[in-house]
Structures are given as C-alpha cells and as structure tokens.
Length: 76
Image 1: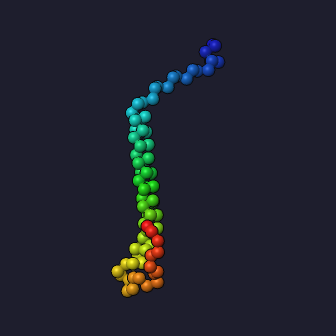
Image 2 (image 1 turned 30 degrees about the horizontal axis):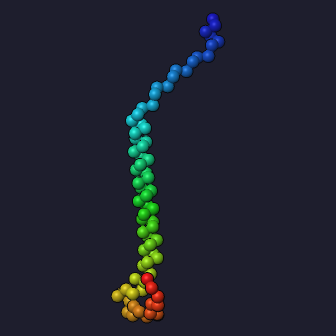
C-alpha cells in the first residue's frame, strides 16, 4: 500500500537533438546578415540625403541650376 503515497519520479528528458542547434545557428546567422544589410541600406540612404542636396540643385531639369548659389570658396 505504500506505493499509493509515493510521488512518481519524472523520466529523464531525452538529450537535445543536434539538428535543432544547427538550425538555430543558421537562423541566427541569417538574422545577423539581414540586420547588417538593413544597416548598410539605412546608411546609404542617409549618405544620399546628405550628399544629394547639391546634386539636386545643379540638376539639368531646373531652368537655372546655378541660381542662388555662391561660388565655392574652400577646399574639398
């Protein structure tokens, strides 16, 4: 009758599957690559906004591209 009052022991869990770990590693690498690409795209957009201002002012689509611009005084 003592078996009625004993708590059952939990079976030991099976060892983790190595394919799960490999899949997680591949997913983490893929996510890091996507984040890196996204950061590069954002930086390129910022760079284009900073550098694109003068180019847009001097565009041939404007009637007078040099209107309102002073000659460049300085070094690059």
